[in-house]
Amino acid sequence: MSKHTETDRKYLLLTGATGLLGRYLMKDLALAGVPLAVVVRASRRMTAQMRIDAIMANWEQELGTPLERPVVLTGELCEDSLGMEAQDIRWAVENCRGMIHNAASLSFVSTGPDSEPYRSNVGGTQNVLQFCQEAGLREFHHVSTAYVCGLRTGVCRESELDVGQEFGNPYEESKVTAEKMVRGSSFLDSVTVYRPAIIVGDSQTGFTNTFHGFYAAVQLVHTLARNTPGGEETGFNNAFPTRVTLDENDSKNFVPVDWVSAVMAHIIANPESHGETYHLTPRNPVTSRTINHVLQAAARFFGSVLCGDDEPVVDQTEMEKFFYEHIHVYNSYWRND
Image 1 (cartoon, rainbow, N blue to C red):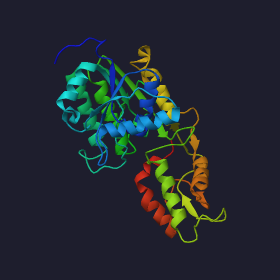
Image 2: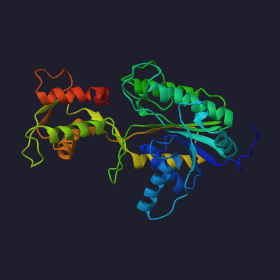
Image 3: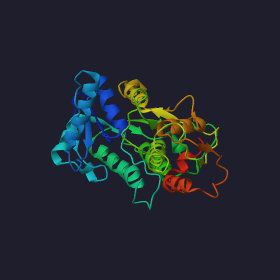
Image 4: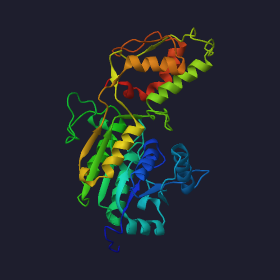
């Protein structure tokens, strides 16, 4: 492949652009003046270009100002050469200096090493690194997770990764493997790692386009409240007695997507901040008591009580059976942080 100067190669290439964090990064990096290209797959109804145009048009309408649109390259994370056409690969070689690897699977269950989340988080990262090596991209920004700590207790430092910790789910294990691969890539000149806590919706609007973890519970209890006999939304007297296996003093670490994106965009736009690991975590976690209050208020799930997480709920009611049948995928998510 031909050589190009740094002035020629000014773009950063972003994966995961249509996800929650990705769409905020496109906006914030545009506002920061960072030239951006994105690798996006087409959907059944929209081309890659159409998907990005729709997201950027929404931002422009919200902000009331035009934004620099990213260059759209159609591709697929889990394919060789990221599934890109030859002319798009050539464009990336000639114009891109680095990668922002944000795409990931959030699956908490797995049927094996060839399924999610390993397929995307490990195999996809391997493909991204291979592409970077072949295309000459030497600057790498990697979105990991604060939960690479696994089930450890005590202080978990930015300099630590695999210390033999036990993992709560396959997602955590896959993200540790991916981060190790990135850190072990000697061809990279600069590696910046971002470890956010649990990313939730916009701090001002509440917007989200992904419904995992906390949002899965909100959706479930909302469905219960709407469809259970006697649970019509007619007032605050409706009650759905459900014992939730959380201790009221347990806590979770949530960070709003707009804050995570703003911090990342600032770091990306300032090269003197590159080459470090950043824990993007909240100063104050959210208690299970607060989470339960939110579930009650947002989904009208009145009557739920926190019964502690030491023992399973016995003699379950029909509602409790339904709740635990559908929420079991996220059991490890609800552990105390």
